Image 1 (cartoon, rainbow, N blue to C red):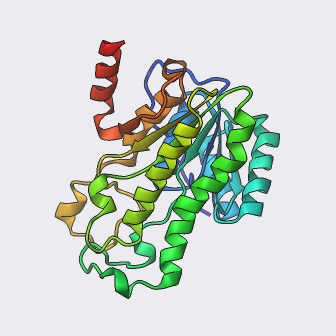
Image 2: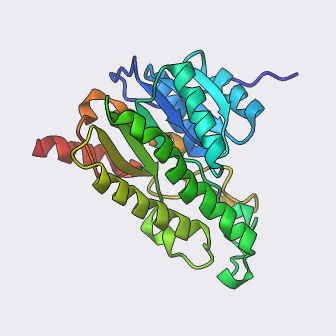
Length: 267
């Protein structure tokens, strides 16, 4: 049996997240896995979740001793509450919640880049599954975690997408799911203004080389895809002491260095 190699992430060299406890939904692949890897590399203890328990546990093993893997279907309220309770029991708390779980266009159209389909050809079940996972999932997990953060504080990061993707032809339901989850994140930030909990939005800034990209994507298009590791520096910073009090921001990972330099200059 082939043993999978450990997973390494990209984190700022001097950032120490020792003592930070994080939950990354949809953390077994793609952007979620890249963020979990960066957080554990910086010293955080991280729970990664996915619908498949064995895959979640295998991913955690590859991330190292600071990670745990749990099955969690973010579409189901009862399973969310049970899963969140398990994370609290095993980590002792949650300081950082990364609402990342989502499914892409491949689930409804495996060839969406080369053969886009109009919205009326989409099945109702496919539409609901994408929206339920991204939008309802973010709501349900945040609803289960945030009340427990109100006393001691915490950070919530909602993963979004480019605005052009939200309205791109042939991108129902993936685009609308991004628009909805971003609106949800902004309302959450307004609701939590002045509290001990911060909410920020993070997005890659372009298409990334993940399993959401169709297999028949032309080589020239693949060459322009972003490495999912691009999410690492931004998510680690958002979990760090330096980001205390940062609230209601929309951060593009591709432009993070420039954004951070401007912020430091203003401060």
